[in-house]
View 1 (tube, rainbow, N blue to C red):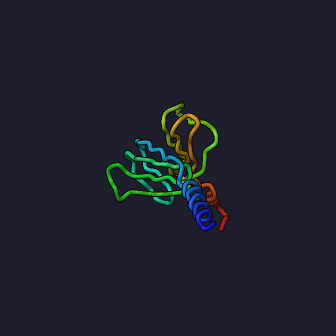
View 2: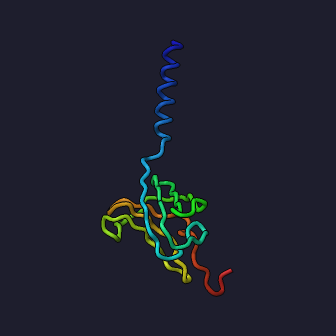
View 3: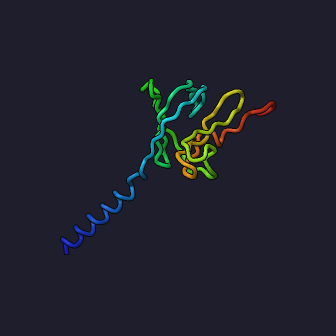
Length: 126
């Protein structure tokens, strides 16, 4: 009986560990020709490595390893505006470009959750 309980516990632990493993991460390299804002930080134009597992995104500057951001994402709806090529999409607001979506293929992309809940404040809004 004890042996059966131990085996059942081991099998259950294995399923829990397998379920906790993140999905396969994908990495793309992109060149952004202008400065942009992500997660409240302004980044300069440059070459970046973007890794995503569908829930978390890591953005790393190819030339400056100290620029290493990690932020939340969720699956994007729609299609890649660049066809089947990897692409980043931006929203222009108050003369700043905000990173919005990351597309690795025509139908596989993530959208950042950092700027969605922050409306632009207008006159008379406190």
